[in-house]
Image (tube, rainbow, N blue to C red; front, side, top):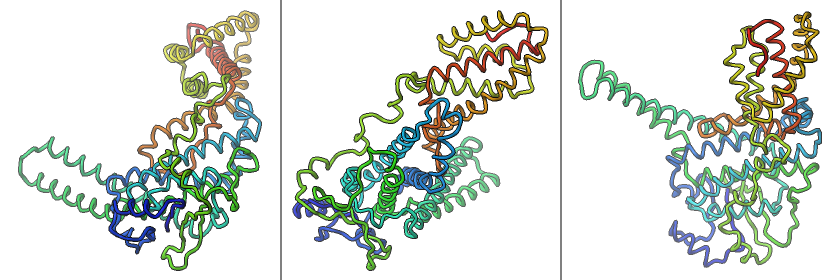
Length: 464
């Protein structure tokens, strides 16, 4: 496989290649048997960052399958919580999903571009140019099929690399922990126990050497960057293919763009891998290349999706996580057979912003004033509140849990190597209508307070 930059004159090619290799060729073939791959340095410590990038790409690939896209349109987007709090506009929700996936792909492509700068192959050095052109719609997508045998094999290979690199990381941590334990327990002492411990550490170190050989640690930059680059292209084309009917802002994927160069994906029977990436020059674009040469794909958008929530949403108010915690805590108390303690109720109340505290106090006072005559039938009123809250939690709780999961997936991204489809921001409270969300939260807290009183769970009345 090879990425070949277009619009770059021969002199610049020679000067660039001379920094990395003494080859006189201006374009180096990229395959497992090529000179560029054999001379390319290995990833070593960058194997772990590369594995995380692969995880992101594989997760994106899986989330774009036919089954997952059907689940998105007919399951997630039509769930009661999303429809009630966020929107029932399919086009709007799909645009949010598309933008989040493109942002994730941009972040992965930025890592691939950075790793590409360490490659011997000139074409891989300039993957950032190829990706920028892709984002402009300059791509020949005729053979970039999503489920071809070659692409599926590439995904499988990436998953194997991720697995072996994960095992390597665990082995390194294990050896490190054993050495620390040895120093703490025995120091420089000798004896049968310490000898056994040293043998165990030696055995673990041999395992580490083995895992280095079979993991990304021992793979070359050229080979791995080429592998990830092709998946970036496949994912980008797939995003444009599935979302284009609903998202008009996507670049037009065409094979007849005469103003710039095209990205070709052709079968090459001479290549051991059977595939070649090539950028072919169509017109003079030296000026264009110079302009975008050092462009970082992460800066193409001034505003990330998470920062684009409308003013009337929970996300714009910065309350998504706080409200998710309140809802989840209230749900736990509602379904718990144990008594809600005064401390727990007070803690939950203190989590609310001032305006919601005032709203809750007013609602409770109004409720107790109206229901003063109905307190004799306490059990019946409590059962009524239970039925009402159960109905609310059925649609409200999933959105709160998805909010927490979305945040946890981002916080654990540095350690998590599980390449499964992730929660999308549209499933969370981030884009939820602030007024409707706060009304629902007040309703469940009033309901919990009433159930607490009517069932005589405490001596003091009300959450406030």
